[in-house]
Length: 164
Image 1 (spheres, helix red, strand yellow):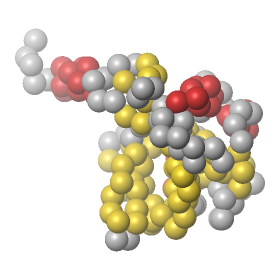
Image 2 (cartoon, rainbow, N blue to C red):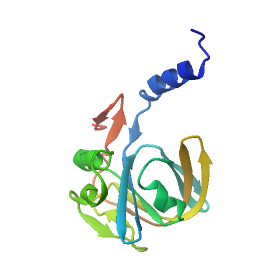
Image 3 (cartoon, helix red, strand yellow):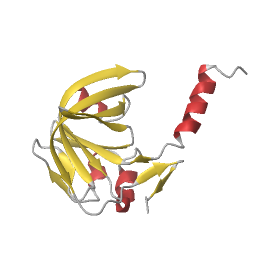
Image 4 (cartoon, rainbow, N blue to C red):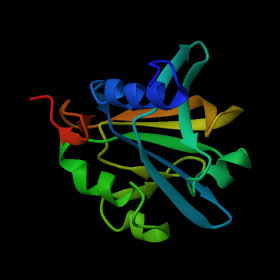
């Protein structure tokens, strides 16, 4: 089999990305009186002027529709003790059940925020771009809070880890 077929490149990319350790976040929003949450690692800082983050969301995720309506959202960086919250928000559990664990509060624009997250970034939806199976959403950070000791939940090689 040729080494540059799309299937080979996808498989090699998956294997390569298993070696990229990333902090786990839960992206949250509210839309039509419902709360949405999704665990993710595809999040990055974008700019300090204006303060902004980008998130990448699979178009098949339940949170995708609300984000397409340009709702505000929050990025909650999980603490190493939040593995159970990440698991709830990773796909199998749906809807309001994703909020059954954790100290969830309401942020400045009505988005759910995890009060004891390592950091919470409340974002105004600025732009959205489609690419392949995902949407890239840019949010302008209008509020940020940090909490507790620095011990983020890390995901690498298909499992959770703690930095210490």
